[in-house]
Length: 236
Ligand SMILES: C[S@@+](CC[C@H](N)C(=O)[O-])C[C@H]1O[C@@H](n2cnc3c(N)ncnc32)[C@H](O)[C@@H]1O
Image 1 (cartoon, protein in one colour):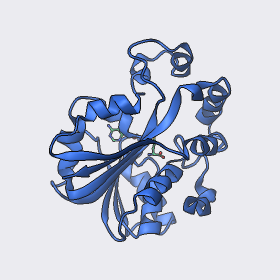
Image 2 (cartoon, helix red, strand yellow):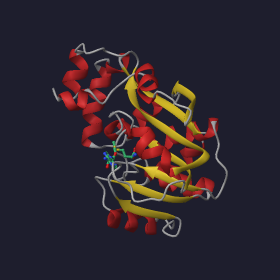
Image 3 (cartoon, helix red, strand yellow):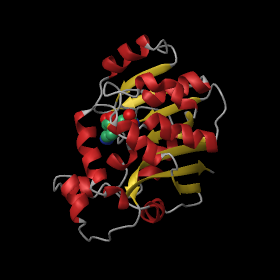
Image 4 (cartoon, rainbow, N blue to C red):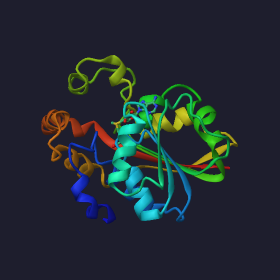
């Protein structure tokens, strides 16, 4: 895959979960974007996906994140020589500081589930920012099958008993129903990512303390329930 040339950044310094660059690579391989587009990287973390968009697609990227500061990310963008292409912004996805119809595309990799499970989030907060005919690329950890309020002991143990964390994970069917496409947009594709397993393995190999723990749960068989799901959404 194209992302394999970026192995040197698949480390605990930059990774915050399953390899976001690999997941985005798969999505863009399947559904490419043009070069030089204006792209919102929503929940960009430490900038792995922004780096990929800037280098591989010559995109002008707005990298928005809540837990990582704009200054930290700016310093890193300078080290990667992409500070002229990536604008780091510290903001909450609930209150994004952009004009309507500003972006050609929005990507949100391993972050959407943290802020978008509330009703109508996609329609009211995200879609207004994309131009008509533009696309939203979402990839995130999900469930192979919805649990319908039932408690899965292994998943619950993995999230250390935190109900709010447990409720972040849903199946493709749940998200489809949740998105409830109107005439405003369509779900072009909803699928399980083929690179999900490798993206988790990249994370386990990163040396991050959280990755070590996640790896232990995958050895206990949590991957029977958890996968990586993707949505490609088009604004009509
Ligand atoms: C698991 S990390 C993944 C980061 C990055 N996408 C990656 O995969 O390397 C989840 C990210 O979602 C971001 N996030 C969570 N809630 C958010 C919110 N309300 N608004 C913006 N970003 C948010 C966090 O700041 C965090 O960086």
